[in-house]
Length: 600
Ligand SMILES: O=P(O)(O)OC[C@H]1O[C@](O)(CO)[C@@H](O)[C@@H]1O
Image (cartoon, rainbow, N blue to C red):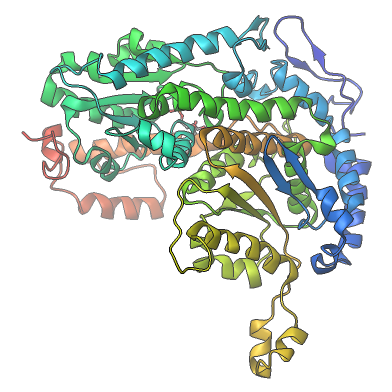
């Protein structure tokens, strides 16, 4: 048994206490030592004797593996599983106390143990009358206080009752943030942009994101914008992230150089959990939108992090539907039996592929251009959450965790990396299709509409991967012998298909929550903390060391010290290449043709 599940929970602050019965040291044995894991390892041999080409002929099996909830169809029939496999994976889930973990999350237990925090992003989309407790009090009213504030503020901006410092309406928004303070909002914005209702609501408005500290991104984000009509939203959970704060100072300079310092109160607002630093930056606390430490950065798109910029662009009513969609999956996740629970099944399939079938990567392939930013967002949600080397107890794990996520919308990906997926490495694929497109085009005389054409590929690719193409088929097609090995497809390559009725704010919310909870399921099975991210710290601190030396070298012409031969050589070459820029005056380093507003 890998864990007794006797988690002690104190009355108000629900902190997990170590159970005493697992090992002498109080540490849990890794899940890989469980009987359920061993059983699955054994079961791999059975699956290796099957081919999807044959498995797909069993209609009962396929029917069992096609699941539906609230309009979403998830087809798992092209996974390399049989009925027994699912049963064994559910045994593994039981061994990992998955149901208890889900309950603990919704109960506000401090399951993010290394940061001693609850994990309650689901509370961000809970209906007003829901009760979700954290540290002894219901957090839902506080969530709605912020949502109501965003509703009112976004309405003021959009209606023109809040004007810029020179009396003009603020039609453009630049949201500055990185990682979770950027990728989720960008994903949802990209998905909503072409939805007719949202597009109508956004008429005459522009939403830009500024994430990278690269000054090229500043130039790109500010291109053609006018300070007088621009609202800047600084989004940072900590308000200390180096890239975001430098970009915030840069854009503040862009605003104040044109409009004066007093313009900040009209043109700059913030989203953060650190309202003290927001104030120190010069933003009126009345213009700050808070959230809470129980919201992880990569899980924060449903907080003010995403809701504020999206409500400014589309109006709060559309964003509310996005939150409702996410809640639909939250509610399903916390209440549906594991065997019909979509995020649970998706998570278990990923664990099966990664830990048992040896496929550490996953391709996310939406057949919908509006989902172009889904894969980049899920990269962070998944890889920052589950790319860990030790168990919750800090013990090195004897197996790899996490998945290497990547993806592009179809059909673009087909003309790029699908070659490898068909004949090279085995990469389990998530195909995501939409029944009714946001845009409909049908040309007279064409066989099918444009969206149907797209979806023909969605259906074809999954079967191409599953069935492959045999030597016999090629011989029958009279393919020359020399070409046969090149034209053969082994098939038996697993994928799953997710079919959404349409792509609206509601279904975007569903899709988001489906992936968020799937990732959590994987982490709970592997026995890791999916909610911290210590792995990003080392690079950040080393960049600080380089920054100090860079400044010394630029301003005092001091020699570099403390770096290895390689870094010293390249750093020296870098410094030599830019000797003309010795920081005499910050404005001097901004060519006015690139960054409008920095003219001297
Ligand atoms: O919102 P913040 O505090 O600026 O952090 C941005 C991002 O930086 C990280 O902490 C690490 O890259 C992410 O987890 C987070 O989403």
